[in-house]
Length: 170
Image 1 (tube, rainbow, N blue to C red):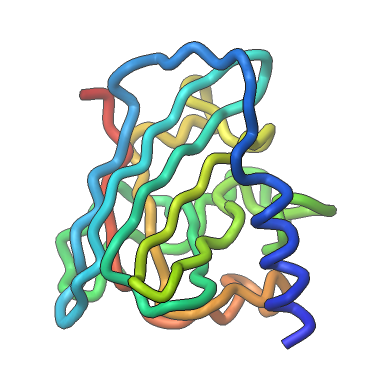
Image 2 (image 1 turned 45 degrees about the vertical axis):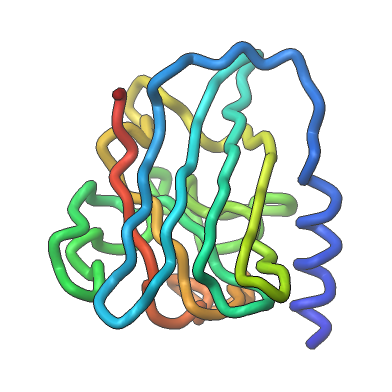
């Protein structure tokens, strides 16, 4: 419970970030539900000043906190999205919170779904890149069924994958 409360506080701290980001139109992931789920949404990425802004609008979740990551392969073809592989981790870091300490490049803040199953996230991350060797373009965004504990290795014990979408230039 303590981890969920800390995670919720971190979500509140990073949402609603107002900045001078200029959208690099067209870098986004359209999320589709995995088999047996109804989660859908859109995640838009833009880059400025060494940070990537992540703006997510997700529906069809159970109320509460959900793990949210970039996975290594841009392949959502498996019914459970396991075709997307593990978390994107080109630096070999341990799994952890993007707001403190070492973490995978693909570790992102959790989503907090309201009582209607809707989650919005607007955050800035320094670990993500939209170009170069650590680019997330061509990789997958995954939404998980449960909260990420940011401790269990290698993936945070966030449960099943309920939605998947490939990060693409559109």
